[in-house]
Length: 292
Length: 269
Image 1 (cartoon, each protein chain N blue to C red):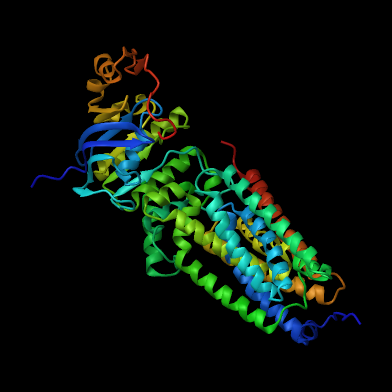
Image 2: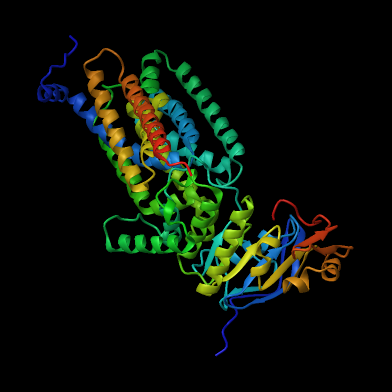
C-alpha cells in the first residue's frame, strides 16, 4: 500500500526514515547535493553547463556497460564520466578560445557516448527496467556500498576544490589575466573537467543521467541569480541542492511517480523563482532610481 | 646609487610561425615613465606586451624587468589584457574582481572572518577609491559600463603594488569622455605612485599630452622616442620604408596618413 503523509511532521520524518533503502537514499542524496552544489557553482561560472550535460549522457553507456559485465552501475558511471572528461579536455583545446570548437568537440563525444549506450542496452536482454532507472534515477537502488563510494568520491572532490578554489575562480572569470599572474589555466581546466565528471556520475546515481541538471546546474544558477557574492553563492547553491533533494525524495516516497521527476521539477521551480526574484528586484530598483 | 631601469630589452626578437614579428629591439624604460605602444594592427604590439609578461619566449636577445629575467606570474607587473568587455551574465561583484589581483593566483580558498580577509577588504576599498570605482564596487560586473569595468581592472592590476603596468588597448571601445578620464587616471597613477606604464593604443591623441615617450611598432621594427621625435613624416617613412605623412591639426592632434597595413604575421597582435 502507498504510504500516506500526515500533518504531524515528526511522524512523517519517522515514516520516511523507517526503511533502510530510504535511509540510504537520504544519505546518498545529501552527499550528492553538497557535492553538486559546490561543483555546480563553478560549472555555471565557467559557462560549462553543456559539458556537464554531455558528461551526464556519457554516464548512460557507463552504467549500461557495467550492468552488461555484472559490475556496479555506479562504478561504470564514475569510470566512463572520468574518461569522457579527459577526452573532452583533450579534444576541446584551450578553454580561453574557440568556444564554438569546444562545443562541437563536446557534442561529438556526447553522440558517441549515446551510441555506445544504445549498443550496450541492445546487447543486454531484459535491460529496459535498468535503462529506465539509469536514465531517470530510482529511490530503491542505493546500497550501503554505494553510499560509501559516494562519500569517498565527494570527500576527494571537495578536497580538490578546496585546494584549487581560488585560482580556479580567477581562471574562470578572467583566464588571460589569471594566466599572466601565474595561474595554470590549462591544468585547472583539465582538473575541473575531471571533478565535473565525478560530480556528474555521483549526481546521476540519484537523479538518473538525463536529469543531472536538476542538482548540478539549477541550484547553482538560481544561487547566482540571487547573489553576486561568490562565498554566499556557493553556500546558497548547496542549500538549494539539499532542499531540492530532500523534498524530492520525501514527495517521491509518498507518491507513485518517480523521484527524478520531483527532484528535477523542484530544481526547475527554484530556478524560475530565482529569476523572478531578480527581475522583481531590478524592477524595484529602476522604479526607485531618481532620473538624472 | 643608480636605479636599475624598470624594463630593459636588448636586441630582442620574436619569431612566430616562421616569420619575425619584430627583431633587433633595444629599449630602456626608467621608473615612473609613461609610454605608449603604437603601430598598425598586426604589427606585434600585444606580442611585445606578452613577451614582457613572460607569456611568449624571445627567439633572440634578452628582456629584463627590474634587473631580472621575466617569468610568468610576476607580481611586479600589473596587466590589463585586450578585451571587449565582460559577459553581461557574469554574476560577481566589482570587489571580487579587484580582490583577484591581490591573491587570486594563490592555491586554496579565501576564508571569511579572518584578519587576512579584513586586510584584503581594506586594500580593495583603498584601490577602488584611488581609481574612483567605490560607487559600484558591490554591483555585478556584468551590469556596469565598459569604462567602469576598465577602472576596476586597473585597480585589480595595481592592487599587488606592481612597478610596471602593462595596459593593452584600455581605451578601445570607450566613448571619448571615458577615454579622457581613463587616460587621466593612468597618468595620475603613473605620477603619484611612480609606476611605469606601457599603454598600447590605436590612436595616440587621447594620451598625447600625458606621454613621456612612444614606442612605435611597425614593419618588424620598433622605434622609441618622444612623441614628436617619432610621430613625424621622416621617422615613420623610414620605419615603414614607404612614404607616410604625419599631419598636425589645428588643435594639436596628430594624424598619420598613408600608413601601410602590417605585412607581418596576422592573428597575433
